[in-house]
Length: 338
Image (tube, rainbow, N blue to C red; front, side):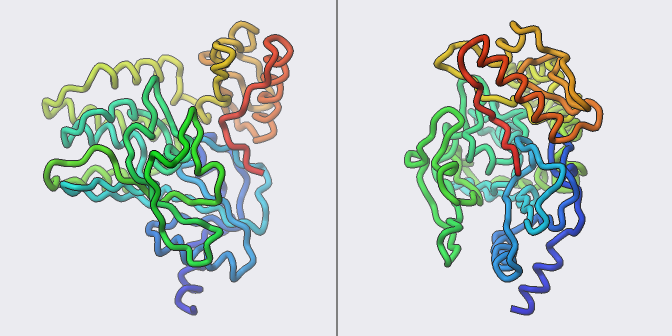
């Protein structure tokens, strides 16, 4: 217990800005932040929270979160973004939850595993993608995973369990993980290497050494470097990946801190929220340091040291305007952390 207590203390950063762990680059200083690199460290943190009477909040790379300006004093914010790992075997490809989703597309080209191109430039870790069933175009994360591994926080044993994808209740940005106190630790992929892959960890090791993993410009720079390196080796970059890059670059997705799309699209209505905001001529509306993107109506940018309250103000402006003019209230996609 003493060793675990000591490890708990070593794992916890004190007075740590949550802005450093969010693609929004927003969030006040938290009393406790931890970034475990293994399931064992994760369990030590959970046990330590119980011992010290701390609440906890789990997240990945922080790409779909709006952290508070004044974090709760007795909460441990646990990021899994350093739990970056995969095992490539002929019968199994396991990927840990902190591994960036976009890394799958690069690995797919490197190791000849087709079908992963849609993950290119998807911000966030695999765990978050599994949780929200991240998508691009017609493709979703549930298309490429077959088994998810998780910890049920209501189970005192905290054992790692598994669930097949078919039982995960997947829908448009929905999953069973949103309905239960489960922490996703990784998944087996549908795509399996034909044989053990030499140098499979090189890509991950480069990412682990990369600084500012939660920063969108830094994330984009890394993925561009990796794509360029593949091209220099004679590997053809599929047009689908080039189109993703052109679209996201054209919408300036990586120029300013943001969470990407703020609201889910209402498919019953039939028109994307961003297009509705365009119709209402609401682009460029600013409040404090936040601004509705001039390039995409469903993005709110941190363009000048915005606070969480600045972003929430503009979210309410959009929700009220869409409700008044189109008859429904957009559902937030961004997770607003209290």
